[in-house]
Amino acid sequence: MQSLIGSLSFKTMGNDFDISSLENKVKRLKDEFDSELSSAKEEQDISRIKSKYIGKKGLLQDLFKLIPQIPESERKLAGKILNDFKQYVEEKLEDLKSALERKQVEFSEDITLPGRRSFSANLHPITVALREITEIFEKMGFEVESGPEMEEDWYNFTALNIPPDHPARDMQDTFYLEDGRLLRTHTSPVQIRAMEKRKGVLPIKIIAPGRVFRRDWDATHSPVFHQVEGLFVDKKVKMSDLFGVLEFFFKKFFGEGTRVRFRPSYFPFTEPSAEVDISCVCGGKSKDCKVCKGSGFLEVAGCGMVHPEVFRSVGYEGVQGFAFGMGVERLAMIKFGISDIRLLFGENYIAFKKTFF
Ligand code: 2NL
Image 1 (cartoon, rainbow, N blue to C red):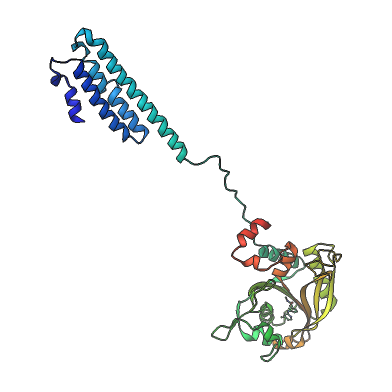
Image 2 (cartoon, rainbow, N blue to C red):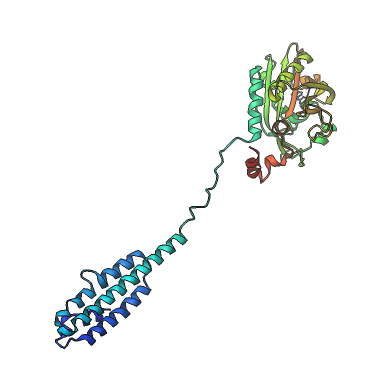
């Protein structure tokens, strides 16, 4: 390129300048231009090439300056040759410019594509249920207690009237630690600890919400789940107090139209014991209701009067009490209409949440 620019200078032109040498110069200039154009990649290249060839101080302008040296008869033709070249350069640059613009549009983002929908964060159904349950019991004057998830055998079983050979252990025998402790199978140990701690200072009116562990994993059981247990201890506590508290709770939690019934049952740590049922969301009308299986009722909790053996374990005398326990997952599943517990804890929870809430 340097040599070309050199050959165009006045010095090398001499006086023997004629139309054919002008044609020659233009042809070489054109070749040079073509090759430069073919390697042009962006807008900047185009404006650089443009000013180099046809700009005010460009190479073509230098050739125009030579016209006076050309014999008059040939000047018109010389002018045409140069103007043709100018037009050629302009057209080529214009073509390349629009080709580059097209390419840019192709490679840029497709603005017609709909944006990704954002979804707002919300609390896990178990958190929602736990907070509601706690709030209702707090309104009735219950205090919230908590305790360790890794528990000693005494607090999880023995103090609750479940001695080492008791069959109730088989149903709950769970994850043991190497030091002999275990992951608590219910939150009852929290209440045992609370009674020990308070050494008979009455009344004791507490709930123990928390995470518990069992060796189970199917549509209605998770190895990690949540319980809320309640305990009320005073000089004189009646079973009707228990019924009143639970009826009030379930009406608040599931709606005032909910009916609550108690069925005799058995737990090692209460006597007498009862199972708590609520009327089904189907209203008991549907024979093939999947939720209550046509029975019209759903089991939602267990309860009873604290067994004298339990009071003996913690050194309490002359007191009465009631206790109850409920599974939070079960309550949340009924309330929110979730059919499989694994949806709450599975890998697909986010997908489930998007379709659900
Ligand atoms: C159920 C049954 C129940 C208790 C838990 C309890 C605790 C102490 C003393 C006596 Cl410290 N009882 N807890 C009593 C009856 C039933 O739970 O079905 N839970 C999901």
